[in-house]
Amino acid sequence: MTWYDANLVLIQGTVTGLLLALSVQVPLRMGVFSFAGAGAYGIGSYGGAILVLDYEMAALPTLLLTTVGGAVVVLVLGLMIFRLNGLYLAMATVAFDLIISVVAINGGELTGGSTGRFGVITDFTMAQMFTIAGAALILVAMSELGRTGRRVNTVREDPELAASMGIRVRRYRLAAFFVSGALGACAGCLNILVRSTVSPLDIGFPLIVLALTMIIVGGSLSWKGAVIGAIIFTWLPDVLAVIGEWQELIYGIIVAIAAVLLPRGIYGMYVDGKRAVLRWRRRRSGATADVLAAEEERESDDPPPRVGELTPSEMGAQG
Amino acid sequence: MTAGAEAVERSHDPTVGTPVLEAQDVRVHFGGVKAVDGISIKLMPGLIYGIIGPNGSGKTTLIGAITRLTKLTSGRLLFDGDEYQGAPASAVARKRVARTFQTVRLLPDLNVRDNIQLGADVRKDGDGQPFLRRLLNRSTSPVVAEAVARTNLTGFESFFPSELSYGTQRRVEIARAMVTDPRLLLLDEPTAGMNQHERAEISTLLKDLRSEGLCQLLVEHDVQMMIDTCDHVFAMNFGKLIAEGSPKAVVRDPQVQEAYLGRKWREHA
Image (tube, rainbow over all chains, first blue to last red; front, side, top):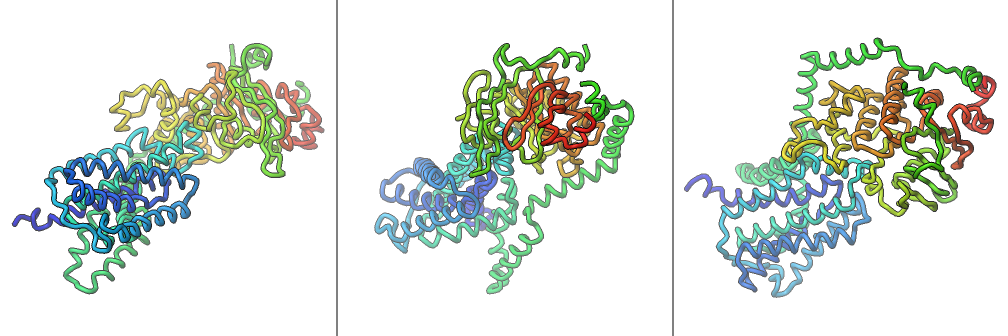
């Protein structure tokens, strides 16, 4: 058995975990404190199971339908709670996630009640999974580059400045809901297509905790942080399995240490480090000193124009 | 012709041509506080206008109202003769109305070049870079390079705002507004935190922009800079316009001296 075969479940978990983390990170990057991606994950999982089992749909159309469905549902949610902000917005999206869980438990035959749905067998391949997840990751990464990246940063950091830079802030925030729904539902559907079962325990509040942990520790402002977080928190339980019952405690301590010591996450620490090196290099090469010296020289060379030379009495006399 | 001589020839005559901006009976009330109370102004192309007034007189609120970041209680706003008081702030910016803020608002995680590039992103004519290069963000676009040079920021491109002095941060903000290729530039205390030399440089830059036909509206506490830079000054107090005219005429106005400049100026005048 190769390493790949032995760790297939963890690899699948990393991919779905990454998309789930991105479904929370993308809105956060636009200043939208929304966990609706976790609810969309439930829609994707159950939607995928229902479409395959009850409607005998093939894997790819199922994935497409659930992704679009999740995106539209979360967009409608976004339109309904658009005026909320910060913690109130977060609470509303948590409530949405809980509603999805309640519907899953009480959905009768459609959702399989507390046992959920199982036996979702399709022709879905791992190559398809990697391609789809890779495409989603590239699209998210592109949203961090160039003009879009700058605009997303502005919408998050200073919505008023964004508006004065011609950015339609409302449109960006609604897009955040749409993309979050699409990513969450896609993650959920991928999960059901490779795991074949879903139960109410697989969705809901624990997903919010998992996604938040991934992006807080990995780094909340870049897809690279989500990748780091997804890898760590999918593989860590497996690595910690050797310590048995102490696993949960050590897991908690690692998260707490990361939150306290790395407020911008591991990727944020890398960015800060890179910036510090850049500053150090500038100082070492004398670039900073050069710029400041040039600035001083400029100030001492040309005599300033007449601003400030008029005294109040001169003004009166000239007038 | 020197900028100064040019300024003498330029005069504010709202009866000739269409104003770039016209505000008619603009009111902004916050509950019982009348921050702007019935202001009507016209800004003609190619002139520098100034607003002076004591703290709390409504200068910044008026700029906020013009850019639609502050909600109007009543009144009309016209840009090039078209009403826009119902338009969102982002649409006003796309009409090529650029502004700076009373307190510097730069993005802390972007370097100077990218902070200025944010302004170039507004331009409909693009920023002179091919798509892929713009996406990868590897080089400085020509319009940003020009703005950097004009605001004397050469060498600072890779610096982050936290590494810059307050005056330099202000210059970055002015460059970001300039690079949008505006038709109307609103500057809220652009030289606050700058030394005398930097103020003079900004004054010269604004006069250069005027000679290129750009209409500007300045809010500034440095009265002497206003006198040297502006073609026409409005004086505000308690949300109302108390005087307008040439800078020197306005600072000699007894009402303005009483409200803003104080006894010292009155005695000297």
